[in-house]
Image (cartoon, rainbow, N blue to C red):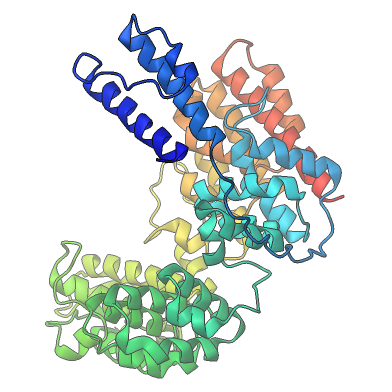
Length: 520
């Protein structure tokens, strides 16, 4: 028997004695002079000594594994290197898990840093790329910017670590054009295929549609829904024939998604059918809107994506009416009546019998709001939002105001939200502020700082505004740091608001330095 085999047998005997106990399994006989010198007075101690000797023998007798071929070097990255101060800042952000001095959680500032670095086309120090990939693995919202910043080195490293597989499934600015797209579509993981389709739609929508059509009949229903979502990039009339065919899909979710996409194309046949139904349901006469909701949901309506049963618990006629009005082109209402969106919204409504139609009026306004968001119609979104409500008055804006705000330009969003905050404070402003582009404009930032000051003077607690405060750390214009520092100085020390303002001012100074370093 070879020495290696003997060592293996002895190791198995030691394992057996450890598992069963030395009182049930005797210790193995010594196989070497060193083993003979082990004191066996205490079996348990002897077992450990013999195991230590056997472990050394096993390691000493191990043969080296065959050498593996070294991978080819990573492709060159010709982008400019990060400025040294910015590189040091990135190391701090990647290593942060909590607070840092008088600033807030620095990890929450990483998305802003990555977006700014990506916009400037920098490449990071190679030593920081593994930490960057690890961080983005745990935070999916960072992946697009992180993979772009990691660049060719990140894609070269990704196959070396299973935790970094997401890199190959993440769209980035520097798509690897050498990868065989057709092979990836045929054999790749689902997430990789969705990413590939999304990339292709951004550069060549027709090629993306042709690729999807080539395998459409064989795709699973749940996959078909997400593939249809990818068609939103570059959506145009060229996609209508494919989407019309999808209205006959056996999956109701696929049918609903196809119908929603078609309703965003005002010139589509589905939009025309919805316009005819909307005209039958709403008639303008005598300075009023006469509303007659559908009495049934026929097969043609169902094919166009309107379910028979309301998933929201609303009455069936109200549900059908809302779905029709939301899918009809908004241009229909202004073209047929000659009225602007503002005037249409001011019209009184009556039902088919000439009685008050208040309930239908609300349904119509809600449908118009959904249509404005779906069709990205700024005129209608502006009219539906109106002016911010005065103090003491409840907002009558239909739908979700934040979604309507998102249809407007960044400047309009900020101005409307600033007016709202000036009038109502921060209590109901969280979603509105979230719809505004960051960093916030100086007027919006000033309005938020003034609202924080009022909240502190009124004696409310900072944690009652925790959501907005968390957002201010990332979104306030850094130029407002002096105003926040003044608030901290004017607030009684050793109070929650004093600490809050001090931390916020520190974060603003940190962001100011951070963005300045990236600007070079």
